[in-house]
Image (tube, rainbow, N blue to C red; front, top):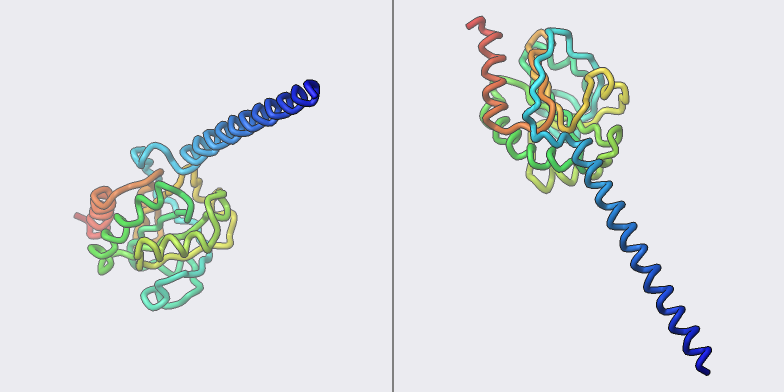
Length: 204
């Protein structure tokens, strides 16, 4: 009888130790995931600005989630937007800095949509930060209505050298890159950079 009692106590201790071990592993895994997300989503909160030479913005095709009426079609190429300055934002549905940035992009769009084209392109499937459903859900949750879509061209990340999420390009009416911004930005920065772009366009 005493032997059975000792055996049961030993089994309980073993289960408790196993549970503690599992909790520790889950905690470590969660911490590692959080670190990866911060790194992959651009943990510098948008302060890393990179000026880019006036190369042509690489052309690629994309399909809109929303904004077909404004841009004229559901399936487009970036080159279709030439003739007007463009703010091109690469983002993803499960990227925390992207979530923080989208409302500012919406406000900026409401201020500047008569002067520039604003378009967001979801690349979550290429960065491990969500799928198309995640992106659509985030747009709906935050009431974002400026043109947004996704691309099936996995070379976009390499050709645009997207090293953090989100990443934004300011492109002139000829399709040349005026400025690249790594990481999240806000309404003031969007206004500042776009005003510079528009001033350059007008020659002032």
